[in-house]
Length: 165
Image (cartoon, rainbow, N blue to C red; front, side, top):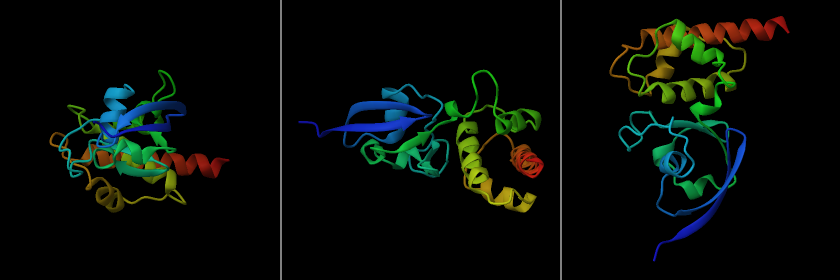
């Protein structure tokens, strides 16, 4: 007999209610039960960061969280960054700075960086801080330089927009 549980959560602003097995990960629940396939699974041990999502405002490795732990939570996935066909400023910066190649790790980086920039107080971010931030996720293709440039550029743009208002 399976240990099934009712789960209610919001993903990218949409309410979802489903029944999941207690041992099912949030990553599997998002991908297979709810269709948010932008959450990628790499190592399934929390090391690579490909499955990074924003859970109640904080970055989290979805492969390390059980779906039942997200009951009542607010989840944001990479699908929630763009506004329709309009890329978010961070996604556009990734494109502008050639911060992706194969793209497998990209959603995890985007969500990690978005969580950091959303939580960042004054919007300042040095190149060294950006390097330290992105070091927690793995990429085998880019060498990280474009990713670092995209992070710093987005932080500067957001700070300038904040100062202009």
